[in-house]
Image (cartoon, each protein chain N blue to C red):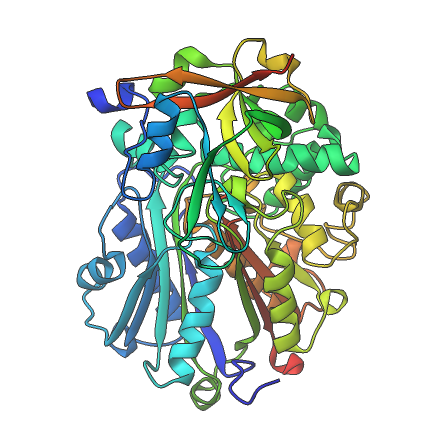
Length: 393
Length: 138
């Protein structure tokens, strides 16, 4: 490990979430501000202590510089700020960039914040942009290929190569719904069965409606500071960034090197190496679940099971309470909420809350070490973060 | 909803891609062959993605390929594609190596299978744009 490693240098000292699901009459800026004030209060700070802000874009508040617009709205004048864009992977990159900024002296207390109103805040034109703008306009979009279709083609190929079944995909949706039932405020809590998923109507083969994640309003925020400062402040349960890795293998889906093995292999390999832990050491994980098949591929690429066995691994109870690696215990993008860029921040919120022992009836007993994997754009972008308590340093 | 939303997005040929669209207007799908490392690439750009060389030779593709993966779209991505559903989006692997996105024509989308042999069909959309689509071979 290089002496410049981020391992254990930055601590997450505050977390906050806005209401999620259907939150009418609230702009992305308000949702962001609501999450931010909760995170800052959780850290025991005043907003004036925040000198760094990292954000992602919001379709319903389409500012070029969301982080700057947010700071004005929230009434702060940070001296470090940026609005990041690597689609669904943005969330995990925010944590490593915040940690690097803190370690490099660019900022002392960094606020990570993102929010969007995809459910109630989009005009028809903005809704269309959210659906199509992220794909290439020369070689993809003229053929009517939304982002869902890129993920669908990877899952479809996974079925062909490894015999993964529609029932195994459906099982992922069922598990996530069961998890959401234990999470106050989750958007979808009505129990579903494999049969319900398979009869929910085809969106783009092999994905049915209930194989697809939700469309939501909502935001989340986090406060990070140096490990030294966290100690000086007497933070009860600081959560440390132990490892981080990213990997970008392509932009166009037709240039993805393999449709069934993704950049998550390399991003997680780097994160595990930095942390000094492997997949078997983890107690819980947040795994980007924009579609059910995405989860199956990530279970393999993050090292929880061998390639091709993700479907059977998940269906045999390994990814829920009592299994090898309980994932997305809040319900994930499939059942808790998916408001775009903030979607994976909800995974961070849950994993951090698990490591702090604050998850009540859905608590994973003794959780000290966790992982979040964020991804986006048909697996074009991958970022992995490994988080741990004081005992894991 | 704006008028724009009712229309399908069309490629806007630029400095990198103009030759491709010109070729398609003439019924040819041009691939770039690197004069140095022999890498064959789609899409079109001004340097070889493998070695960085700018000596690129344009040759028409044979038009033969196989379906590497596909997905039949039942929910249209916006109003412009509503009349087309269900349609099969193909990820075609060309005989020359490169892969590309296209759509299936000339048959029921339900008949598309993995590794199915397909053949190029050039479909004129406007004076400027002809899109490369694929039908079942034979």
